[in-house]
Length: 120
Image 1: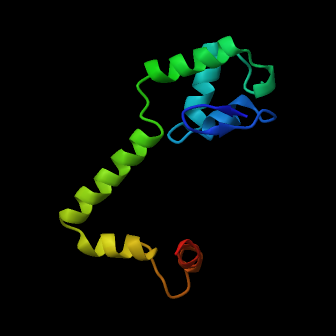
Image 2: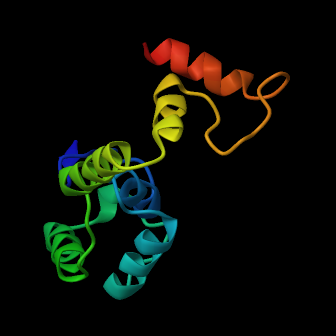
């Protein structure tokens, strides 16, 4: 297995799919990274050399993406700041796993309730 920014990548999957596994990199950014490398989107991780992997790391560091633990810390700090200011009801509903923006809960939002119960 190959580790990239604290994320375990699978060797048999496409490069775009593997880059999407890194927290903070989506489909758009992973396709841009493939284009800058000059590698096909369907290129397998097995076929990459160490030089290509080093180039991927350099491209991600140069492009000023906030990824991994830094992005998680940023999201958590924004959540804390939002909870300390106004919108107390919004935070309570978010913590309970209920819809936040006034959606109907009588017949909808059952899946979000189930997901939240599994997390607890």
